[in-house]
Image (spheres, rainbow, N blue to C red):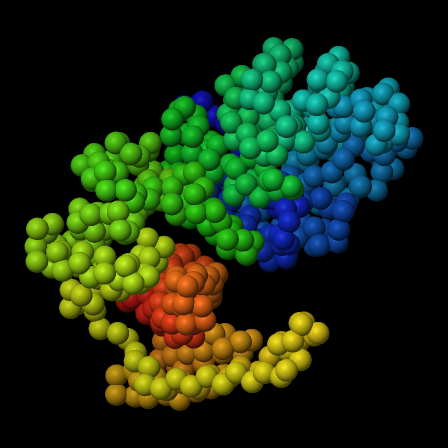
Length: 530
């Protein structure tokens, strides 16, 4: 297998994504996750841009990664000064990383209109910066910013900027589709031209503004690029960076490149989800390779095919990348789908058994009433175990009372920003022969119930402290009934490692929410026990 070198920029480019902000501790956790996966380079931040990155690099000096090489990120020196006098370059040296990534301008328009420099001065900025860093014994990756746009506007000048980097001692050059608008054929042709011209490792850095960042990265590799930059979960400015989990998944399982150590490929899904959890971002369920829907099957024909021969509807075996097959339950799924799904936790059930027929009948009736088990697999597993008579609830709710005080200002259009005065929940739970009564106040009745339930149950089950709600959705099922309509509540819960979804249906939104909340905790306790 030919080796490719992966640079993950989650902590730098990924941190520029909307809604993402990493603390120093977050950054340390992400470095550990990427290092355990076997990423070659971790672009860990711009020490010249903020004190937080400098604090992070200072901490990293005493906890160096086992596999990955840290790289600090910065720009070429400012115009009209020496590289040795540039404060940003001095910050790069203070970061004390073995490698630095330097970006410079490749597009003549950026040089003249943004930097307000001459084209010759920009070339000198590149030369002076890289030469200076090489005297400091640094490995230097040169990022040619806006290279493909620059090549389109002025091919010779774009190539001249690369020549300046190569001649000054850069260890590798990386071609950046910074605006994310290039097409795969352009990426291939231009990357090949560069590789034919320069005897130096060439990398690719793509953004997803045109929806082609993954394809563009792969086409650059086909053209001969050996270094790939991106972010493992696709985080990044605007539409994000190349999603490295899909790039690695494709190149390593299908094109016979080694992006990460082969033994680590099964960690791919888990690592992406760890990073999503640290970033507090709900990952798209249909992410290729690592999404929870990546190997999910719903239609009867698909389920039948994949149970007979997985190759019929799966492009790779899900366990190769640490994912798993999911059989979704719905009104279009038949008995085969249910039995295949149930066998994950009741391996002895037979397709033609009375138990299977009864389960199919009850599931379809419940879905007719508003349940949707394809989106609530935690509730589905609990239901099946109850129907099979092998599940005993860990606790019972003996009493629940909710008080939601409102003031008129809070529900009037004249003052819509005022919330309710308070929501309080009092709950009595029984665990075995013991009872516990607690109360809690929350931001709304559902939050109050959640807090009170946790408060009561953590006395018996301390592992409940690990979980938090990741998402809460309400769907009106029969709008013709107006305010008396049934609602379906879906709650997604995580313990930092796994995610699961539970559901409740009722004409009372508080009752539906309570059912989903109880199932979410029961499922955690079931997982912990198993």
